[in-house]
Length: 97
Length: 339
Image (cartoon, rainbow over all chains, first blue to last red; front, side, top):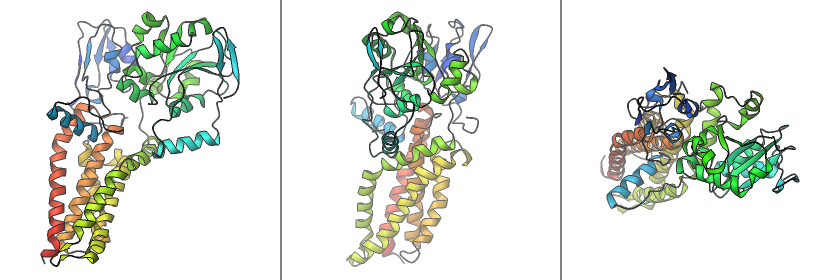
């Protein structure tokens, strides 16, 4: 993955080290290896590599991690449809992916 | 299918760890898009080898490609395979969409009476299911605890040999040339309906000329525009994914612009004599923006772009692409009237 970097500062990912119990599940599940453990607490080592898959947040037993909760595959067609849906006030967009 | 293994919870179908001609044919159909959806395995319990009560339980999605990817790596291994109902969607996408969930895994554990089949209480989950499955909640819901195995099925034998320990290479997602190539046929296939409409419009518009309408121009100019469109599809949905790590920049619409700029030159050279300089400019702009849009759409297939990032780049790229496409059409229609 070293050859692939996406836009810096775009991903929505927050870790609350106060709440963290240091179980290390986020370290285990992250497919981009962005977490580490320091002083028995999780820390974000490479924030800009986050793709918002949400695996860390889902597996955090104390809800210390927040990730952009919007799901959807992230293709342009999906996002255009989600914008249209927002304007129209209609329900969940689809893209056919 | 390769017979059954008798268990206290009934007979469990045993599957082969080799792929037949029919399996490969199905893979090709799914990968090209001919029959990509509705390629499912019936959810439930399966096995490979001759598993017993102590054998590991590996969980996967009910997309046939996911199931095949797993079983073909399990040669010489005795294991149970628990297939959960993800509506025929692969592990990662299903986890993202919420169908590969804690509840679904717990449901299948109960429905298959897994507790009667094995003596241990442990499930090996694909790491990419973590987006949908909370391992800490599984125990409460079905009595089995979840352990995240490797991302790739190919690493499972090593994972099992290592005492169910995954090393860093098993835990990090990759996006190799091979993996990107596998996505290309579907990227192109999904465009065919849109392409038909676009080509129809292009041919009709190409006929407009100072003599009201020219059928000859419909063909000569129309074919030049059609070639440019096809080149743009190859550039955006094939060349960009293949060359992805080597194209400068991070935003996909910008990567596409660069590939499109070069492809546009090829489109102009190929159109030689069929239009004038204004028309050539229109062709070039058209190729650039179509390539850029398709490159941007590829973000949905990569394993490293965040939804927030894609939205951000689309707010920049899309107005330019729409404006560019409009400009290209104006230039194309105006060309026979100027010069």
